Length: 200
Image (cartoon, rainbow, N blue to C red; front, side, top):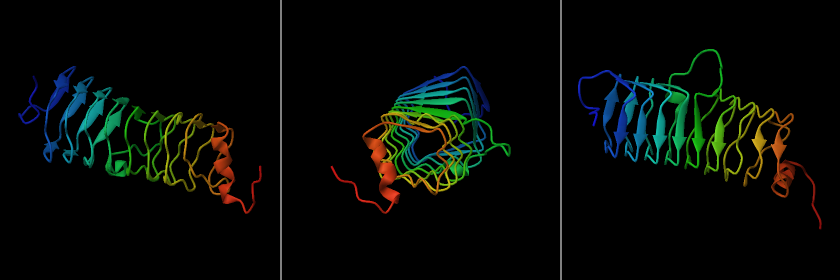
């Protein structure tokens, strides 16, 4: 099995299974088409690393640091990724499509503040107290995700799909919602920002 503590810099099509590296610094590593399964990297730091077309499956990534690291077409399946400040990663100056997708992940207390997340996928996730302010989430797929106490402000949500999503609180006057998709009855939450009274 590959050893992330060795002197090797580049890993191509490697499989990392059940590795535990908590509160560890992983510096300047490059991963191309790698799979991480059932790994525990909680509270570790990925410093100036690069991830290309990688997949994380059932991993614990809670409280990791991603300082200076870059991501391209990375998939997270059923991962625990709590408390990550994604703004510390290396983002291209030109806002392209989102570099990652999340399926059935726990993303609570994370920050995507001001990031380019066009076409980002967050399906069946728990995204409680997550910061999406000033982010570009054009054509995002947020279906079946729980957004309890998450923050939306000046967020671009054009054509975003909130089908079957729950607990979102989005000010329709302070966000861009053109052609966004919502499901009833949860869509009634969009009226919370208005000074009106709903009656049966």
